[in-house]
Image (tube, rainbow, N blue to C red; front, side, top):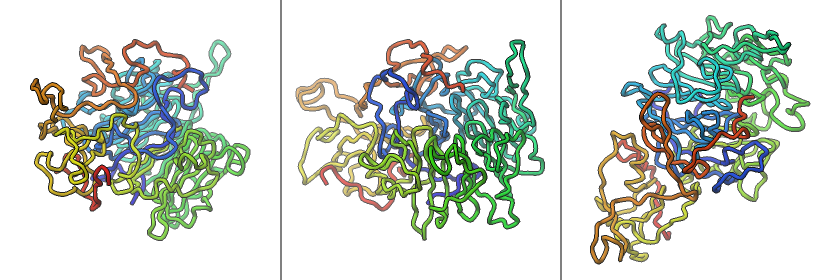
Amino acid sequence: MAEYANTTSNPTPRWGRVVMTGGTDWPKLGRKSDKVTPGDHPDLMAPHLLRSLRTTKVVSIHTSSHSSHTIAIDIYGVAHLWGRAASSSLGLPGVTAVWESAPLKIRPKDLGLPEGVKFVHAATGRAHSLLVASDGSVWSAGLNTSGQCGHSPSPEVSPFRPIEGEWRGSGDRVIQAAAGNTFSIVLTASGKVYAFGSGEKGQLGNGRTGEHIVTSGRAVFDTEHIPLLVKGLEGRHIIQIASGLQHSILVDSDGYVLVFGCAGYCRLGLGDQRDALIPKVVPAFSNERAVSRAAAVFAGPTCSAVIDRGGMFWLAGKWKISGDGSAGQPWSSFRYVQDIMSLKCLTASLGGVTLWAVANDNDKILNVGWGQNAVNGELGQGEDKPKSATKPVSIETIAELDIISIAAGAHTVYFLAAPNDGLSDLPIYPDNTEQQEVCAVCRTERGESDSPLECEKCERLFHLSCLSPPLTEIPLGEWFCDDCLQQGLPDHLVAPAVYKEAPAPGAPGGEGGGPKRGRGRPRKFPDQQSQIMFMSEGAGTPVGGDYGGPMELGTPMAGEKRERSPDYDDDDGSDYDEYGGGARSGTTKRRRGD
């Protein structure tokens, strides 16, 4: 069962697998372009398991309503990044995209952090990213024209660099981050909020926009790259933050909701469209009855949402294209969504065009979604189902999943789902074009009398008797081969090989002699992946997939030094012990042919 979204205080968060639906052509999503992205990057009209992270135990997924890039954090505190990479939003200069089939992996030690430090939170703006470490430090990369990366304004910041704030000298530490278009905010353990970037619409919460006239007669606004303490929060302990394109919403330990920034389309829920230059308390959640106050807050591009302590879902602003809730009829103050008012909402997420809630309906969990203009399959209802929904509907394609959290992006939606039968039944993306019909160890087929197990990641086949040690019965829950299991582990936990693949008959090392092949053939996904290496600034070591080794990317960057395209860069405006293997969930793993 899902829990409320604020998980930073949970010392043992649940882990799950990454499921995605919606667009995957990162350079082109949301843009009108005749340019063709090489390779196959389809819109996923139904939820798919992400193959590249199939064995990774993920505890949180971070994206935003205005982002086409994503950060997932695993149980070891390693960050996995993919999506649109223009303006160094993923910390890599000169790259347009990092494909989800080969995410960029960043370990805290790759940034020079001490052993034992983990990444615990992250945030994605339109073209920049923030990583929060367990030692309280926060790191940034990406577009920085307004100082939104917490460094002196510049075209971009790359690779990830630490942000200096006054919390570092006071013994405080950052625990959460949120990012908008041209600004960022961070939350510290003491409940303080700091902001940096552009204050044009009051996004910095410091009481001013800094508007002034330059010599050309043009109005410009101040930017603040040094984090500023947000005003008006004295005496409050903020416990959660969220940001849309140009506004932020906060909740304190007493359940009071505060908003600041751009008020266009009434997204602040204050009844008018006057920008709030310092945080203002939302009257709807100032009731003396504590149960009527907020439990969690969420931000969309032009809307805000609140789940109150009774599980009611409230919404304000523009969240539709037409009709009630659209630009012509925005919800000027927070209203509960009538269609789901009988449900107890547990968590939610607001994407670029979709809205989501996980709710309890008389002890039955419902996964609810809605939104207009979801042309990339963001609702994930299936190939022959409607792409959009003007009212909340139960998304049947994920009805059997145990959803931990939802992360809705601009054109793609992610679900963090705990292992169960429903999860194993989902299709896997990218598709596997090299399915085998013989055992990967003995290279033989023994018929139905000894049909092999299939690894749930690479889809290779293994006879029970060919495993080391051999199995006598079908294992319960997820099952992965040794090679795939170890791909989800940090380096110090990778174990030596426990089996060797036999070569195919007639191949070198097969009948007729010759050298034997090593274990585990490398898999190839639909796009032939090539390796490309990047050099970190001021260092003589390569920076890539592991920030210390080559990163595999899709064909748009393969083997060529690319000039940045202006069209792409306009983003300014298991329980194998404890090491990540098959969870024994009480379900039965099917053999090939069952």
